[in-house]
Image 1 (cartoon, helix red, strand yellow):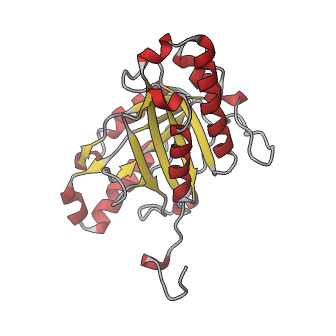
Image 2: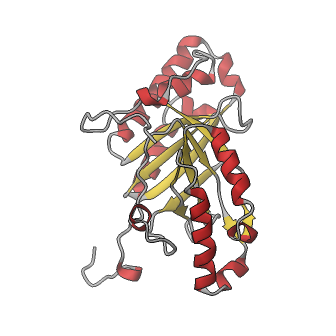
Image 3: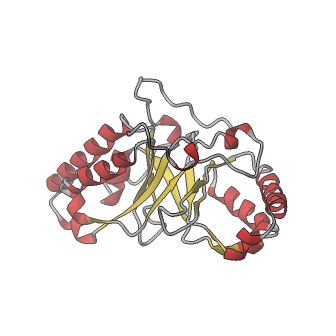
Length: 260
């Protein structure tokens, strides 16, 4: 980088956080078993390679829940080009020819202006491998940004205090201003999807909720190994393993099971 160049605000880039959703063409299921298996193996090999070079690359199954998606990725990397290179590599696999991407969301991390909590102020996403992830795009109505900062801060403090009562749910919201169509991407790890439903019902009564313009579509995915997610596409497996058995860090450390 040119030494005379200074980035806006002079702050670190942080992490790029992407959510890419896939749907398989139903005609793919009519291919011979061996052809499907080879396509899945090639696709999984690419995912496993990139999981070793990115900060996070997790796979979530939505088979049988959302009609327009079968699985999605949660990608975390400080290098934007990782997302491009992953997409290109997946396009080069046999299975890639049978997949569409009905949704794809991109965000980035930054410290929150509304809280003093250390984890959130650091502005980094650190997944804890809970069994389920809820993710959706979020847009506020424009008048929100013209409120005095003190009013916005008070509304967000109330919002955060309500959310903190659900100790089995962890928030990983990222920012999309200028790099995608939505403004935020809220993402919540949870041990039970119904817990998140109760949380959202309670948050509807908060002051901050009055300023919501859009918070759909909403996706609930189950954390799985990529090969299990792909086998669920054609029914090669019908029972998805527990998330606590998954994922090893690049240094060989096994990720801990959820404890909260």
